[in-house]
Image 1 (cartoon, rainbow, N blue to C red):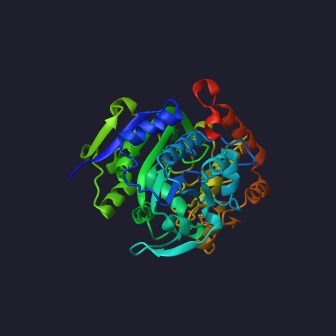
Image 2 (tube, rainbow, N blue to C red; image 1 turned 45 degrees about the vertical axis):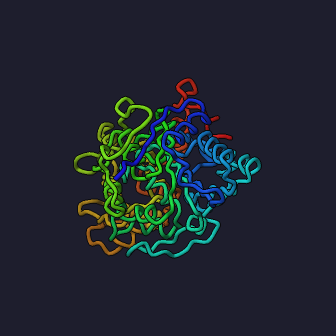
Image 3 (cartoon, rainbow, N blue to C red; image 1 turned 90 degrees about the vertical axis):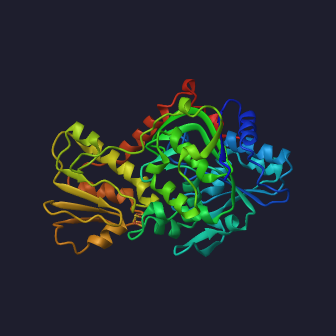
Length: 430
Ligand code: SF4
């Protein structure tokens, strides 16, 4: 059996770098003229209210524009860009396309810009798992997958296979973070179902403690290209410092498709792998007794136990968890908190011995509403929950949470990136 070809290329100028990555990986060989091509970037979310550092969070517009230019030059004329971003609460796909300058691709090359959330989803049996897939993704002859080189606090890495989770509807995304299914055994079925002809991992920036903007980005200047999605992910994981065999969704996908996660089974071309490995942490460290992030213990916070999120917490709640942690941290004024436990997701149970139990989201509320361990429940029942309601509820028990503290934090994390270090917003605008 021939080895899958994977190219690792240094990113210098976008067009030249993308072209080289495609040439070295023979990346366009799976496409035929006349194919309906869907490009799936990673545009999981954006924030139009607060400063949003996109580095390592979303696909750079520079790489995407270069890819479209190469495709147009090679005679591929039926190109769609599609994504199903997080609903906050309404979908923001078209607003993101505008923000990132994708309308230029529409005007210049006739590229169609599709927000999956605005279109039809088709109930699809993926071998025992039923999910609703975007019609445009199912209708494509070939998909070009353009994820970001990032870590993920629930799945260690988020690369090509994970990126295709954006092709399902909101209810299916929630289902993937189910109580009775392991997250890493769900979304690989989507990747296995779709006709992915090329994976181009955008590693202009890499992201530690991803997948969102509260992670820490590094300028890495790398591209990974392969016609074999698993092979691209194995190399992407290695570049982030992870053996693919230690990433559950990669091994699961390999079993599902008969592939290999052994890097020695691949043919690597371009830059030497060893010299381009940048180990990035994927998660925040928690205290050994699971009372909160290590930073809480370092600050001397007591009287509070924020249980660590698990993989049953879906993105809607995940996006709010960091604001909650920041608000609680800022609310600490040196006095112990009033003996509070906070639980989240679909499986966490309230512990005995607390005066207050915060049920963060509809899921922990449903699971714990009759839990005899709870003395006083503080139910933030939304799906996802409402931060103002959380702030108000905390104040009522004497914890002075203030959303403005989170706003300040967002300004801080945005401004810590300096243009001099390569954090150039122009890379995100066509
Ligand atoms: S409450 Fe949170 S974890 Fe539960 S379904 Fe809603 S967003 Fe997901």
